[in-house]
Image 1 (cartoon, rainbow, N blue to C red):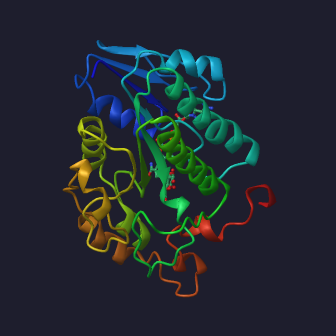
Image 2: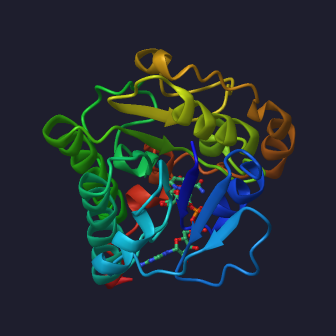
Length: 265
Ligand code: NAI
Ligand code: 15L
């Protein structure tokens, strides 16, 4: 693997990967609409708005693997989601189709299935139940990945990321937490697996109360090692989640599921 492209490289997960993949491939092409700082050895900085198809073509040219993180990462105005997540993700996949079919890791989200109740146990076959327009945009990305594999042979892994931040903060994120180390390991497994076809995998660590099964994704060779248990005592002592009538506690997507339409807030 000669060159890896990371979109959204200035964001939280992008910065994790920028450090975590240093030296992993001869060239790391880093792209974002936000400032990327200075290039370290082996890095190529490629500022780009993902909604600009011609610019995305230049980004994707000569890459062997795309980690597509860029876009709006929470609920937002539809116009913003449309440009960054829907048009932007289309531009990335279509450039890949035309320019050598590099493998793509697509950062999907638990909000593609956020309206499932917390009691449900899901695998890749679970029906999509997006909990807002952000979640709908992730369903679009997953559908595009499926179509571009079946129709054009572009291989991809859609990672329904749970909560990849330094610490879990409540019962929901105790179940959905993904450590930085497990995420970086997953990105490498997706690069190295002999074939991935079109795979959906839940991006979650080996937590005690996991809601999701990755039994169908064993071919990726990914075994998460970390657990959110280290955060439990502090969270339980904090009194968070103490209102049993809070409707957000019913859904896997938590407050994303119960929030009003973004433009009515
Ligand atoms: P983030 O918001 O920190 O980073 C996203 C990056 O995308 C930002 O640097 C932003 O400038 C860039 N971006 C936005 N619109 C763009 C555009 N039109 N053109 C180019 N770049 C653009 O988000 P984070 O946490 O790093 O997440 C990365 C990806 O993973 C996102 O797609 C998010 O939806 C997904 N994800 C993250 C989770 C997490 O726990 N961090 C959970 C579930 C999904
Ligand atoms: C996501 O999809 C977001 O990108 C991230 O910022 C968190 O809000 C996470 O979901 C979550 O479920 O809390």
